Image 1 (cartoon, rainbow, N blue to C red):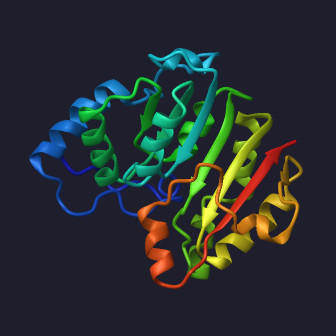
Image 2 (image 1 turned 120 degrees about the horizontal axis):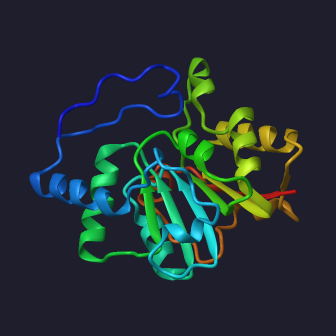
Length: 233
């Protein structure tokens, strides 16, 4: 696979590098073959009913933005076979790992997108999603990089457009500054209400939560995860 040309600042605003170490030949093959089956083609108009994107019969649609190696997303597709999942991940190595897993165990309730999730959000029909997950996103800790954080007024507008009323936006992070940033931005946005009854709620994992390798690293390094849930008004 040839390296892609350097993208403009606008198109790469919410993620960093596209590639890590060179992927192995078997991974490259799985990536090429797998994307032919699972990748969404944004050059085609989005269907009015997203259920038509999937081989399985699904009753709800859930998007995970930045699924990394895909551990959480794969587990969710198995746990909820009647939900259609869309996973967005621009990092080639993460997508290759996902395609290797799918070659061994296919999932007909999953589609993927391997570029900027903002493009995908703009492609999706209005009020078409039941749930959005943003789990351990890049915190862009330096102040000059904060504009690259995925949680922003413009992306919350995108979330509000594609989520159904009553739909969920779930955010998890072990970086306190990004947790506070997300709370401030979501509470300032008229379309979202924070779902928490008491202080301990935001440190309680989601029902059926499968811990990720990123979370394991955070625990080893003494950081505590916050799990935030916002409801589309």
